[in-house]
Image (tube, rainbow, N blue to C red; front, side):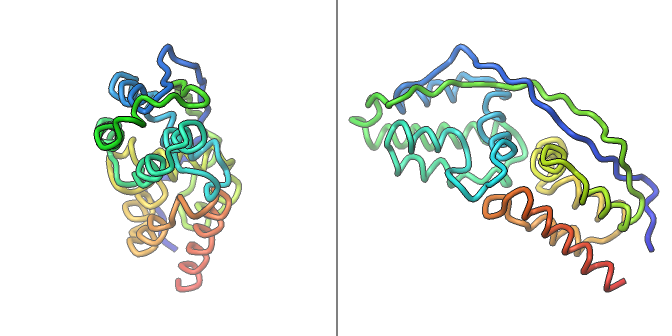
Length: 219
């Protein structure tokens, strides 16, 4: 059994959320908010949305798309915003650029709808991130599996979803350690290809565990 020189340390995360002083009542105002809001706000309404909705297969994938659908009644805009996959982004700046592009192009193509008032305003929020070790570490695949099995939703989200921004790589903490720490590149790739949009946090965790079990049987 391979043993990693550097152990994988499991962390959990908590967010202190506050409502900012920006809001939007029309798609045009949403564009202005996207341009001016903080990076923390963009993160809150995209990456962090995936942690607050344990059942990821329901609704749209980010708060901006959900507002366009439910409050602005602009289904086409909602679908375009939802089509932006956070897995493709290594920085908030790049994600903000594409969000703005989608809304700007929509407003330009639909000037009558750009100023149409929504049922409810969109309030830009942001969160401060607090990370804490959970007291678990792993040097072997067996220990790693045990750790994942007992993780909270918050901890699984931290390592599997939001870690992409921290690593500045198109991967997650689990896959990064499996490849670099244990030399299990194929397993790392398989874990990284688990779809975070068509799976809940629980079903994604179950798939990670099944992939690990398959690797253990091979060994």
